[in-house]
Amino acid sequence: MAIIGIRREDKRVWERRTPLVPAAVRKLVDQGIPIVVQRSENRCYPDTEFAAAGAELVDDIDVADVILGVKEVPVDKVAANKTYYIFSHTMKGQPYNMPLLRRFLDRGCTLLDYELVTNDAGVRTVAFGRHAGLAGAIDTLHALGHRFTQRGHDTPFADLNPALHYGSVDKARAAIEQAGQRIAKNGLPPEVSPLAIGVTGEGGKVWGGAMEVLNFLPTRAVEAEDLAQQMKEFSGRAHEIWTVSYGPHDLVEPIDDTQQ
Image 1 (cartoon, rainbow, N blue to C red):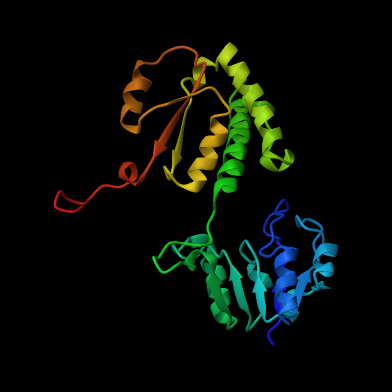
Image 2 (image 1 turned 45 degrees about the vertical axis):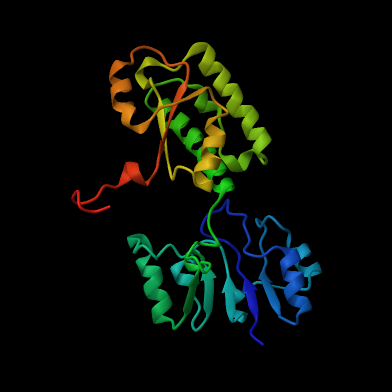
């Protein structure tokens, strides 16, 4: 029987996700499916939990026939004649990952991409959701604070940390709400006011997570079609953040009026 392997995520030093949790590994092992897990000090579940679930801990994941991961595999770590199950980020022809796709082909590998797993209605069953929106919004506010600081603008965003430093949504919420209270009281510098933050994918799960974080701040929703005019009319210091949601109707338009 083919050996299934869980690779150590190594694209980024802060990556802690795993494609299978120990409980899922136990179900597979109980069915007689051999599982190996590449040792990792960063994974959200310790190696000992996978071992207790019946997996074999290994240093070299190449002993597996089918290799599961989350993010892309570094080009130089693609083993020959394996089946990889990952987010390869190649479906849209992303230029930065074409060398990876070429490597899979050259090494005789089979690539199974989570992005292409759909149900009978064609809807993706493995996709980013609320937590991606939460983490993305927290990291964006953190990065925004550093950008403003580099440009000489003092804002409460400068005191925020990346999402991974908080450990929970509640801790991140407390920090962001504190920043929001300072904005509501003192306002943002005129040089960065009004601050409008646009979020795409209106109505989606990632959008929902991002909006959840932004609403920890004093916010006011602005319609996309009204943003330009309100920007022109605004002057001074903003005591709230403008949020603008964008759906497909805001981002694309037909080539001519005969197309829907």
